[in-house]
Amino acid sequence: MKIFMTGATGFIGGATARHLVDQGHQLTCLVRDRSKAADLESMGCALVDGDLSSRPRLAEQMAGHDALLHNAALYEVGIPKERIPVLRKANVEGTANTLEAALEAGIPRILYVSTCAIFGNTHREVATEDFRRPDLDDPQGLDFTSVYEETKYEAHQVALNLIKTRDLPCVIAQPAGVYGPQDHSELGNTMNQFLDGKLPMVPFPDFGTGLTYVDDIAAGLALVLDKGEVGECYILNEGNYEMRGVLEEVGALAGRKVPKRSMPTAMLKALRPIGPLVGKVMGQPPNLAELIKSADGVTFWADAAKAKSELGWHPRDLKSGLRQTLEAEGRLPG
Image (cartoon, rainbow, N blue to C red; front, top):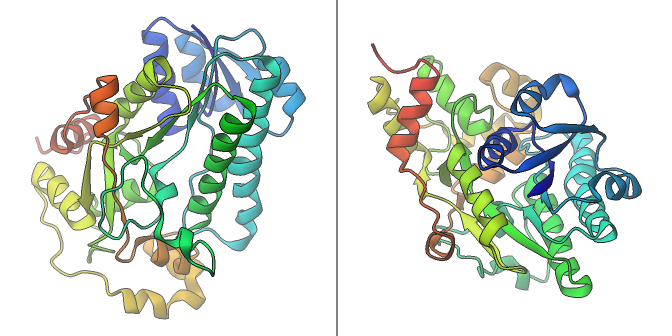
């Protein structure tokens, strides 16, 4: 297939582009900064310059392709107020522009990469694709844990609405948390702080997240694009874990002991007014209030039984993936 892809320079996007090229597909990748696209060029991907702001230009660039894979999004939690419009423009407006451009260009097959975060805090329940947020019935409205969650939820609704009202030939993938070599997310940052001996206490030990090795997310996206049924959603998640348990798995492989003490959330809450300063010192984002709300006792747990049974997706287990990650980063003991 000739595939037009957004977000190919990102962590998941780069792995997905590599997987699709290895399968024999032709990729055209939309890039904002060619200095970040050297790996894509070396794979043989065609590059086009641009962003998600102009629907007519997007339609022109993707015309003639067999499929669209819309993966571009900004993933940031703990952001300052000035970043809110940036996330909204990228995640909501960018998705609307891209999917409507695909309609205009007559793209016959579309994969939109959403996230399990749209379920919000599952309160230790394991969500499936038809999970209904408890706050949907709250008269005060939805209670999002972060701007990222809010904007991705809105973008997900954009995709569903276009499928329903304009027959958008779209299938939706919902990855949970992801990890792998050179992961720069907050989870990756916490793992690196632990491995570097800079984590005296475990932050948010009962924070619950789904986790999948990045190459398995890539393989899952390829399966959803190839076999997914239009209008359907497919969760991609190997398993559900808590922060302390993840660090214990990392420690067992790397030969390091996890700190016994947990970071008191009350202390973090007291430091919220000086969040930017504290975040810089502790290696955390500047908006401590949002970070706390999105992690303190929160679970983003989900079940990928549908993708496994219907698409034949088989991700590696956490221990194997962590071992490969630490080996690639030179973190395993000699």
